[in-house]
Length: 319
Ligand SMILES: Nc1ncnc2c1ncn2[C@@H]1O[C@H](COP(=O)(O)OP(=O)(O)OP(=O)(O)O)[C@@H](O)[C@H]1O
Ligand SMILES: [Mg+2]
Image (tube, rainbow, N blue to C red; front, side, top):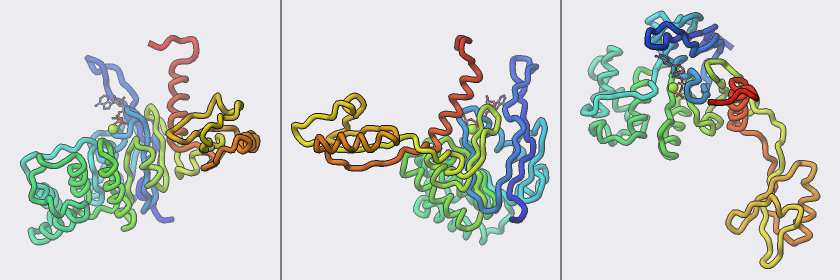
């Protein structure tokens, strides 16, 4: 493996808080992380975890209290590094009365492309993000999903090798999320490195080679979504149907849930065969039996719960 695309070492950020800005609050605590060339990397964490702080530090929009970072071998305080990266801020604000084409032309101009090349690029990127027909529409008429896609086009108009996206799917409906996912997959296919923050875990699970989980400014774990979540089986989930007039086996009656015409019950792995036996004896029709493995979401919620418990140990009354 060559040079990592992103190398973060001990990155720390304290914000001055309070009326006189006398107190310091640590929002990012000694983050060390490497992202390889060509990876789609998900940066996960609940609200306030420090995701945006990290991205702003990497973009040199704010300065670290301690630590360093390099992108493609160049320190983040090297201005030349910034030509090679793209950035979609968390809540991008674009001037409403510009058209998508005008906005992208403006960004292409910042990168110094001559007029002919700008025109080609803008057309190419409008197409890439599925806005070929909306190029001449003013942004105030755009839906949230369309704005997000213009934002991504803006971030990649100069063909950066490394792309940073802060919550690219937030606030989008399933169609919009799918479109953004496809754009990220496209970038990945082209060999770009994509580093994006999200709290939509299913999207991260689908897209990312690896994820990092951040909580209260501290890194909790890094790994492939299937690796970071242990493969232990929680239990077995059985879906079944009952024949008209027959009743549930008593052992299962207490915890089977009815969903439309079907029933769902979850049993321990050891109890699977006896449960199936009982269902057979009352002539239930088994529709499916699936092992329940923890998802990234389960893992994430467990970490958050553990963190909350540490912040409010038993006995200490929560406010
Ligand atoms: N300019 C600032 N001054 C003081 N504190 C700040 C500032 N910016 C962020 N913080 C604090 O830093 C912590 C991390 O914030 P950050 O915006 O990085 O979180 P996030 O992970 O991006 O959350 P979200 O999912 O809500 O976007 C929060 O506690 C926040 O209140
Ligand atoms: Mg944020």
